[in-house]
Amino acid sequence: MDPGTLAAISAVTGLVGAAGGLFAAVAAFRSAGTAKDAANRAQEVDRRGLVRDVATVANNVIAETIRVDDIGNKLKQAHQTLATFSGQSGGSRPKLFIDDVQKKQREVVPLQQEALALLEKRETFSNSNEDELAQLLAKMEGYLVQIRRVKEKFIHDLESVERDNQMYREKAIKHT
Image (cartoon, rainbow, N blue to C red):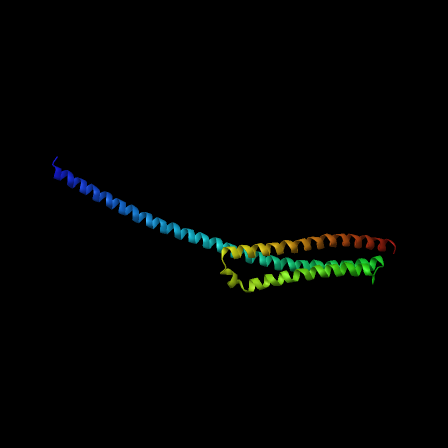
């Protein structure tokens, strides 16, 4: 073959290779942009998930504090009934039990108020970064654990006091 033909074939091959490289570079650039957009969308979805989780746990804090208050009121009433049945009405022991219940009810109120305040300014915490949202979520989950411990204690105590009340009722019925 003629050296000029070989040079032309080499030049054309070089141009085709260069064009292929250019297309590969453009495709890689587009792929990187798409990957970056996908990563940004995934991060935004994660952040929105954290916002939703914070709001959900804050609502649970509020709901559980309401339950604690309701169960606490039933427990106080049960203690008053027990004091009446056992002849200790007006004594210091029933008052101590009732005061303890009221103290625990008051202890959960600030947690409820903080959860309410957080939900009222949802737009503010919705714009927080992931670290701030994770801290808020951990804080609200901690509050929820505290409140549930109080609720479980109230439920346990209420069951115990109601059993005692039932025993006194049955004795009273038998003696009449």
